[in-house]
Image 1 (cartoon, rainbow, N blue to C red):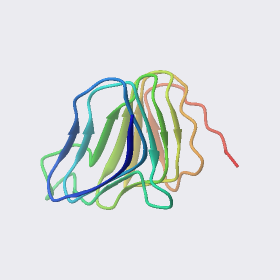
Image 2 (image 1 turned 60 degrees about the vertical axis):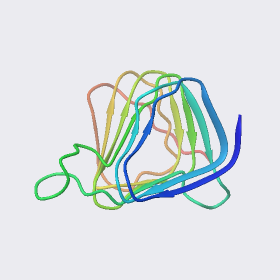
Image 3 (image 1 turned 135 degrees about the horizontal axis):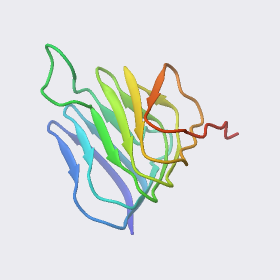
Length: 135
């Protein structure tokens, strides 16, 4: 288990390990974030967001489709997720996201169970999604 990880990077971030547990962690980057392995259990460091990406996506921006793309099968994420100039994508089944998400677009592919604490903006999904408020 990792403890007290705080990263600020001026590049893309890619997770390429399974069974990652990191409590009190934050990833902040000017590039994209790609969590292509799973499952993982990430909890943000205090009041600092869990994931922050300043990567632009779409026409005229980076060639990436999403600023933050997480393959989250059987995973748990807790803490704010922010994509200032791009969108966020969650792929997988049976995962929980206990977060406020701020992005230009939020996409979810796979089966339930994704629970969001608060979601500003519209969500696009390819399958039914379960939404809830966690207080």
